[in-house]
Image (cartoon, rainbow, N blue to C red; front, side, top):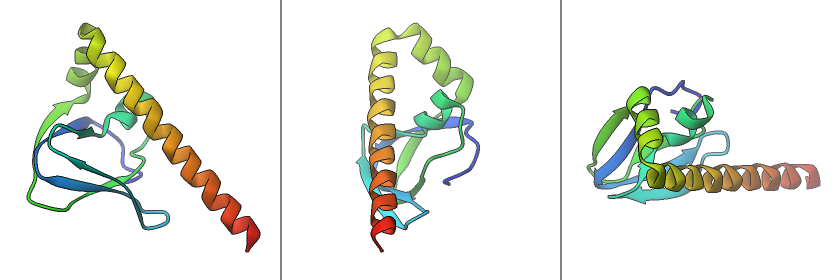
Length: 107
């Protein structure tokens, strides 16, 4: 849930989920098998940035924070891919919030 502290990341094995920004009740992304979530809070040591809701029955693999960070450390290609995903998702989140602030300013 958005705002919660992070202690693990989730890797989707089956099913589909929606990533929801609870501040404005919008779906910001949909993820499916092969995707993962929860990594931003682990990498940045910040609270969760969104809430994830299931769209279909879902099976996930859960990786605790210590193991997740160790995996990144020992697998440089995985670290690069995850950090790239984090950067992209954080940039999208920032763009979304800037757009919301601009719309609010015009009203």
